[in-house]
Length: 351
Ligand SMILES: Cc1cc2nc3c(=O)[nH]c(=O)nc-3n(C[C@H](O)[C@H](O)[C@H](O)COP(=O)(O)OP(=O)(O)OC[C@H]3O[C@@H](n4cnc5c(N)ncnc54)[C@H](O)[C@@H]3O)c2cc1C
Image (cartoon, rainbow, N blue to C red; front, side, top):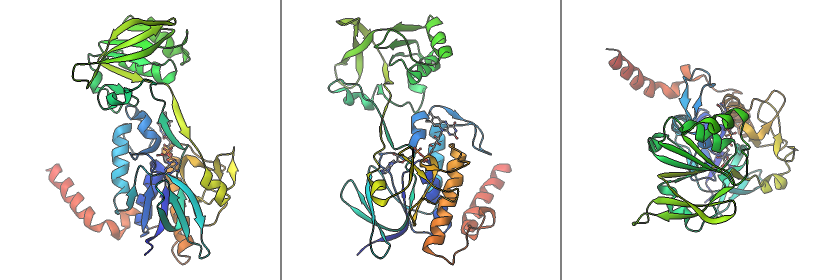
């Protein structure tokens, strides 16, 4: 038997996660599908950075923000599927959407919220056989925390903004920062480049790339990196505790499903829509960075506002007699039980 959802959200970044919370608040049976193993979207790329510009939220680490928004998304127990990419969307003659994912599974939904942001983003990997073995130990493409680098020798591969921002950030934390870049000058911001070149704690190696990785006896950690400088093979042996690779990102922004469902696009990618989250296709709404309209705000707060509008529009589409907007959370009976517990806890803490 077909398990039909009121709304299926494509994408588990901030817009998709907040949509999942809000559609629960509006009593909609909700499914969310995310292509990556982890929820959080682009914020996973800057987990160690502080976010200051979310209203009413004190400065917060990206990693903490991701934890909080995932927890909020789960408030009303939506079905969440990760590591699964939406490949194709079609509508049958009863107006039910059939969403096909890369594992061949078909998902059935009365409405859809597209929250696919800038597409599926993955870091460009080090092109060395077997390097992936160390991704669980001391080879890094993203940095959830700076703690492991305290008083360590850190080799950074790359010369763009990502690499040099990391190098500068680690100057006060690591014992030694080595930057290896295949070209003869950095392409990062001038001020950051000047800082790294002027700091005696940083060792900068231009025309240099990582050739091989030498592990410890147990083959669990990289102990040394063999670097190739000025085209000379294995000219440098660098002892390291950690390697950070910043070689940019691959973006899979294939919108096969958009071609098929005929959504109007801006710049061949973004969905042309309205501030109410409408796209050019009835029943398909959008929120977050993927949606384009006059006055659009490409920030977390913009993604939240889009999510509320997209959910309200989807609700009205599947249930035309429903209220256009949801009941505010402060007076919403849905939270009555949790509120009692939370207020009791606050009173205990205030004693
Ligand atoms: C470096 C950087 C720093 C930033 N700093 C700030 C800041 O300080 N404050 C602020 O407010 N904003 C900041 N932003 C912007 C903010 O991160 C974005 O506005 C926000 O992430 C948009 O959320 P989203 O959910 O629309 O898209 P995304 O975060 O891009 O999430 C989209 C999700 O959809 C998934 N997806 C895509 N295609 C498919 C598919 N076919 N099937 C299944 N899943 C799919 C992707 O894997 C991804 O997880 C920053 C952005 C960057 C890049």
